Image 1 (tube, rainbow, N blue to C red):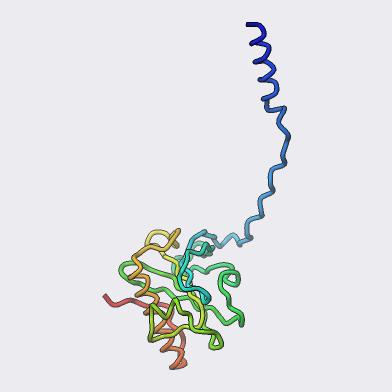
Image 2: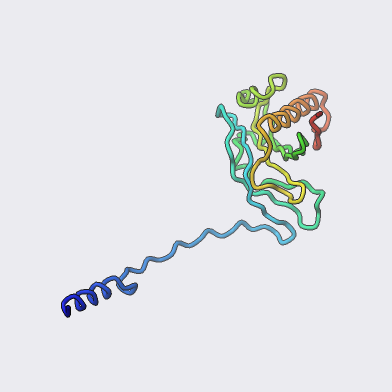
Length: 182
């Protein structure tokens, strides 16, 4: 019995926390610096890239102005999200479709190939660039991830692409608010 007790004491001593080697904790990366009058909201949006045949969920940071509910949210780090080689301007717009509101952000570059993923959505408006779709909420500014069926989201993208293509041909300002007819 005494041997068993001695053995258990030895085991306890070797398993104590002081016997474990100390490993330094990793240093977390500093958060992005955002002015106090702005609020950064982590979210996800559907990205329709040029060099792929399907969309995928892209994490991004939406920045909204505190106290200005009618101002469009802006997506941070679009240079890292989009493969925009000629740095064409990015155009945001709100599209209302099927009771859902979407912020659609894109660019158009005549020198690029046609985006085949978007060609499946709208054959009448071949798009030469990329599109990011983020869901906006009714009670919150930006939703964590896109909501709505694929049909509703595709209808919103189709309306956006066709209206932007018509505006570009007519050389007028690109639309910033669109409604999908029911």
